[in-house]
Length: 235
Image (cartoon, rainbow, N blue to C red; front, side):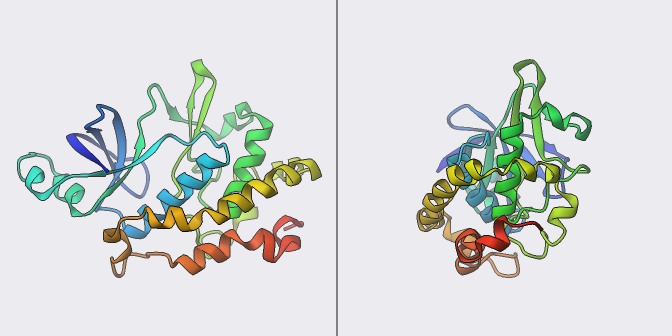
């Protein structure tokens, strides 16, 4: 786990407020910390690990820590929150801005199909025209997939097929697409235990912070196997 060496500006975008920090590797990060429920950090970590492994352009993720002793000597309003327990950090992307919903078709079709599948698989209902949760670096023609703190939640995803940014791209889930993605998903479901074991105990033991249960996450990720018709069929 890397240490935070500098706390910069709070970032006001989004419900889960984050802070820009620099870690001991001298990289800048968008850091979600003790101001967010521990459950949100767990969801971010699991989704980030799975999404990156299936080939989505998710910024590199890390866990960062700030000791209570360090926090005492950092004159910053977020120092105590950063020291509360390990933070979830997403590497800063230079020159990135939120993708406007009017520009969603600048995202390549295959990537749109994979993002839609990923969000449906992890039950992430938080990618809509109002809130795309995609970063764009126009001059490099790069797209980054961010913000998964509401994943693994049946309730949050109840209006998934009404609201998802790429819901129309379900038509791109061809037989070939499914045959290519299914073994990748099977492999990642099998890696859940390893990803879960990476989680800090300080996150898992928090009470009243919407911490997900391992069995629930396993059930959600297993839907394509236990109910393939319901998973792949028409919503």
